[in-house]
Length: 446
Image (cartoon, rainbow, N blue to C red; front, side):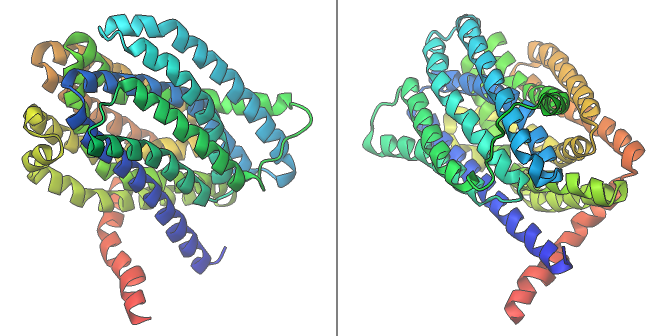
């Protein structure tokens, strides 16, 4: 691939994924902005807990399937693709059935734990969403492995747009939304998106007539650690909200969720770059070895930091105005929560690319062990600090556990591929003049 072609790939793929993440966060944020005004504090808290559970269910499946499928499809010969896709589809179906069984078993328990009777019907209805979201995940992973991102962007835009559109129309028409209505709309979005995704992935979606045991073993062997990493990472990000719901109230969980949603706005570049980096890092490992991976890590982290830093500074300086504008005065207690959560936003790019790079070089077990360890630290700190400090304890617990995770990740990356922390900061500083010269000044001159 020529230098110009590489620049075009990164620019086009990066922009598509930034647009996807931006639209996703925008729709999610817009829906949240309206829901905090439509729903009571208790109902919003229940919705936060429901979303925590279903997000974990999605991560269980995508963690076991997605990274393994992308890794092997992006590096294998085209003749092997049908066997890989067939084996991955079998694993996806099996894990979907298992998760549906777990939802059926644990829904009553979670409803009792969080004192939320309506949670049972929400989770049972979600079964339909889960089936079609699994199909969509499979299609999107195949497209990503083939370095195509247009269908991923369009299908996710439609899925999230349907949900946001319903909430917006309900708000404007003053229709009284029930939480169950929201789940049915999620189902509609998943079904429509799955149908559209098939049209984009059709050229690449080829199944074998037999199920390859070799590929089942390879995909599952790789995916089991990626699965554990994804679930543990997600638990680390949601355990604070779950424990607030159990130890304090659903309303406390909802208040903390507001701070998390606002910080998600500045996490868009990191999500987008991780999607582009993963298939590229798998290929670079095959062609350039660890030196190519080292550069990829330092460059991607530095670029992400450059994009994230302005947002962190703005939100920190104007956190009170942001909270009043977004959630209203009834959530004024979220202001100090937001200020703390913003601090660990600067560490997230390091952690996300740590997992992406180690997974791409086959060190999924290492990633898994680190994330499990950090999750255990987060769980213990949340239990202690929530009991001592209330809602603020959850914010400090997550900050401390992120610092611990950052330190461990840098030690491992130094040993594995000799990364330099200073290089990431150098790439961050270089990003601004480089971006101006390559993409702004060049276009003005042309």
